[in-house]
Image 1 (cartoon, rainbow, N blue to C red):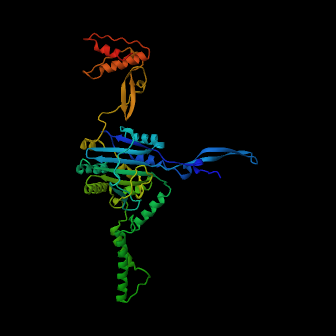
Image 2 (image 1 turned 90 degrees about the vertical axis):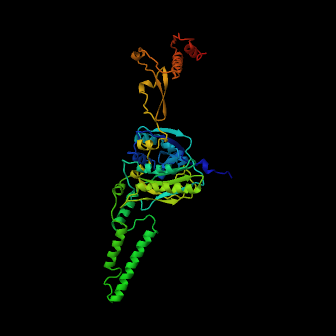
Image 3 (image 1 turned 60 degrees about the vertical axis):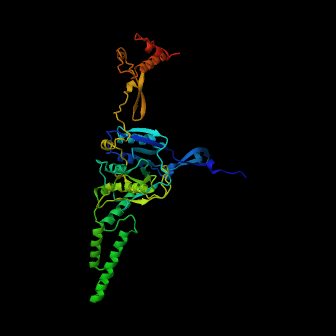
Length: 457
C-alpha cells in the first residue's frame, strides 16, 4: 500500500522574523509611540484567514452547470507577534524590534512616523543571555481592566530603567523584553465592565484570587458574622432576618471600602475604548557574580514602580521566571499575559531623547541632523558621493539641468580631505558616459593627473 504523506497536502508555515536596531538622536520624543502599538494590533487575524489554498482542482458539476475549485494543497500560517527589546550594559544601551517579515514595511513606516528622525538598520541577531541568567516576569497586581499610569509627555519609565547603569560592572548586562501579541478585541468590553462593577460594589479586584489580602477580607466577613451571632445569644434577641444582619453588612462594607476604594483612575476609564494587546514582560540579568546578577534583576523590576497607578489603577509585580527564553517564540512559555492598552504600551515603547542622551553620553546616537538627497539629485551622470538617511544609503549626483551644468564647480578643502578622489570618481563617471575629460595640471610633478590616469587601463 502506498504511503500518503500529510505534508503533500497540508503545510504549516512558521513566521520569519527580522531584527531592527534603532539609533536615536537628540530630536527623539516618545509622545506618539502608541501608534506603533495600534499598528501591532492590526496583525491579528482569525483562524480562517490563516488557512490558504496553495493548489486547487477545477471540478464541473453537470447537474448544476457550474464549475468549482476544490483545494488539493493547503497551508496554515502560524500567528505572528512583535517584540521590543532594550539591552543595557555599563557603557552601552541598545534598542531593538523583532518584527515579522510579512509586516516589515507597515511597522517600519509606523516607527518612522512615531520617531521622525530615528535611524533603522536591519541586523542578523540581537544580544542574547546565558540560559542560566536570572529572569523575572512582570504581571499586573490587579485585574486587566485597571490601568497603569499614562503620561504622554514623560519618558519617566525609561529614565528609571536606565538608573541601573550606575550599579552595573563591566561584565554585567541586563535587558527588558516586551512581547506584544495581537489579540481579538471582541470580549474586552465585557471583561472591562465586570471589573469596573466589582470596583463600584467594593469587591476585591486582585489578580491573584488566593492572596493574603483576599483571604484577609474573607476572614473579616466571618469574624463580623460570628460577633453578630454571639451578640444575639447574649442578648437573647435573635435577628429578624436570616443571614448576616444589616449592622454586620455595614461594618463589613466599611472595612472592604477602606482596603479597596471604589474609584477608578482616568487612565482606567480611557482603557475601556483603547486597543488591547496581550503583553508579556521579561527582565533578564547576567553577571559573573550570581548575587549581583539577582540584585540587578530585582532592581530593574522595581524601576517599574514609577508607572504604578494609585487609587483605582494597577501596578506591576515581579515574579521569578524559570523557563527557557527564546525571543522568537510567539508566546513565551510559562510567562503570564497582561492585557495592556496602547496608551500603557507608550510607557514601554520608548527611545532615548535629548535629556537621556545628555545624561548617558555613551549611548550610540546620530550626532548630525540627517537630511535626504533631493529627488532630482538622486539620478544623473556625475556622482559626488553617498548619503545615509535613517540607515538608507542614497547616491547624490550633480544636477543634469542645462542651466546648472553651465555653472562652475569649485572644490575646496584642506589637505587629505578627498578632493583628488572626488575628481577621480567624476572623471570615471564622465568616461563611462562617453564624455570628454580634460585635466589641466601644472603643480609640481603633476601628481593629480597621474593619479587620475591610473584609474583608467
